[in-house]
Length: 119
Image (cartoon, rainbow, N blue to C red):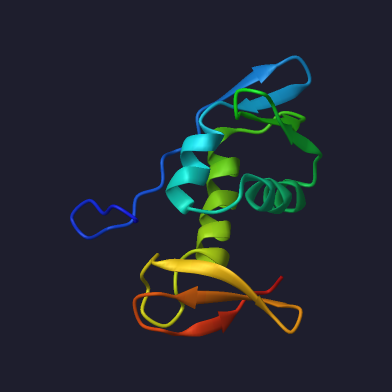
């Protein structure tokens, strides 16, 4: 069940801080919960977009190797949302990822569309 504020799909802004040579994405789990996607899938996308390695710690935070500003991470989350969450047909986030014949599709529960991703 995706909640909406005034009809808009809101994803929390990333809360990040530097810790040594890493960037800790403090509210990673909140963002993943809001997107209703698997944490590993979101993390894998972030690694590719940001060109870094990353892991999820025991508290559900993402630890990204390197120094990344919140706006750069937010842009990557926006790209993820556009590719894997929002339906390209109706624009609603009421979707889930399905695999058919080896291809990942965005299946919309609102309009019934099944759209391929670039993955």
